[in-house]
Length: 130
Image (cartoon, rainbow, N blue to C red; front, side, top):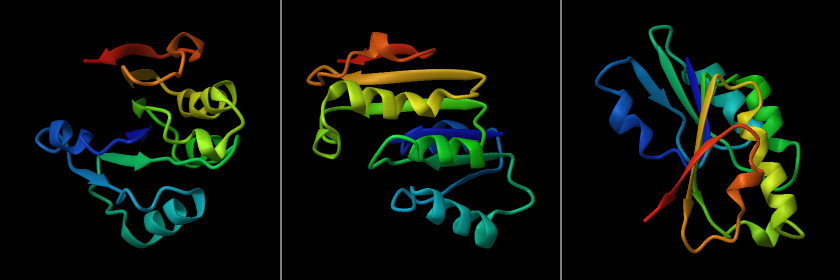
């Protein structure tokens, strides 16, 4: 199984007690880094792999999702911190939406301060962080 997401740091807490879980370190979040980590570190006994995806432009999260097809896609900490990489919130939303491609289930959590419109995310169930 694979969990692919943006800002996935809390997930191992919930999964490690039920599954043999590995999480790619958060500072390894590009397609090249993730591929290298998998080749060097993935254990045959791993049942759940947690992958954090980052993006500096559209298409980058799609590349990661294609390489590590998620059973569950999670988008957390949806804030405005990445707006400097994109022209506007619509471009950022489209890039973040890539994490849900092909996922069996998905969820998005947004900070109340965020200007990202979660209703524009394709298939995610979403909640607001209070």
